[in-house]
Amino acid sequence: MKQTALLVLVLVALVAATIYVAVDTWMQIDADMTWHGWLALFLGVTLTAGVGVGLMRLVFFSARNGHDDIDDDI
Image (cartoon, rainbow, N blue to C red; front, side, top):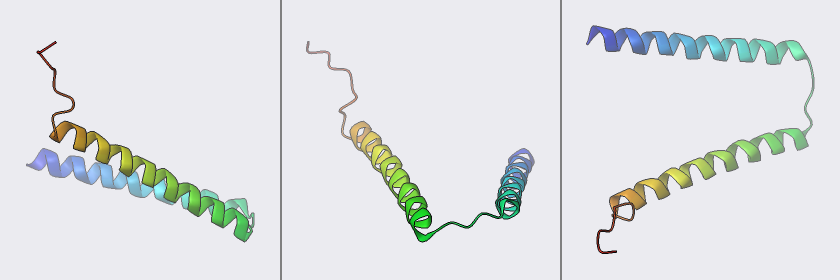
């Protein structure tokens, strides 16, 4: 139990450090994005997440309904 808690703590610290470095780097760039850039960023993130969720849903659906089972009747 202690090892799991320590692992979670270390991973949360790594994620927090990564977010801090990303935000700090973004703020130092000092580049303005137009609304076209924000729209493209939003659509890219949304569509990429949607494709990922959709594909994972298909994987679980296929596995649960037996589509991935080996057919011995051949």
